[in-house]
Image 1 (cartoon, rainbow, N blue to C red):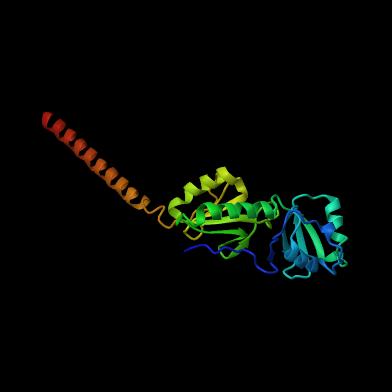
Image 2: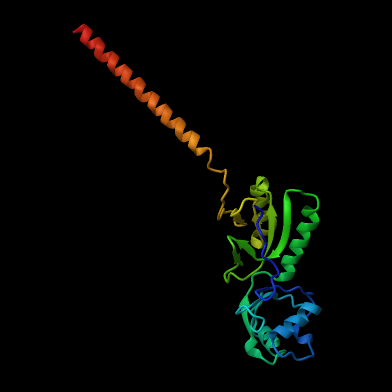
Length: 230
């Protein structure tokens, strides 16, 4: 089953799409709250030090801005642009949205249209076992998510790890197959991967059984010979 990508969900996961030259201080207008400023960012562009914006409590009334540069001046600049300062909180993002978006666009251009083994390329969170899962220390950051056929799973994990390190998450075709690009398989639920163990186990039992019978025959033969000689 192909994995569903949890990406760009309104309110719960609000991702920023921005132009890197735009700064909060360029906003002459005062906004009533963080959501109003977010709407302005969404329309006109976003600072390049922003990783993403997510809902703090599941609503649009309180938002958390994840910053790649946790500078007090940046926070003050954002707070000075809104009246209801309690509507915003801050967190840390390792990568900016602009950087991840550039990687996504590069992969789409280089692979998606020409490689039938890559099913999709998205930017956001993943949906694993029905649970929306973010990344980073906060568990709220976004990554580039690539869904590939399971036959090329290992190959593409290695390929994209070399190119992009942990900025990319590769998902295999089987449900539950997840490998973060850290060179370590975190979860692989391939339904066929252990099927070869049963016949091997049966073969080992047969070999042991034959060996026991063979030894018993040798022992009986030796005992018979001793009795005949005696």
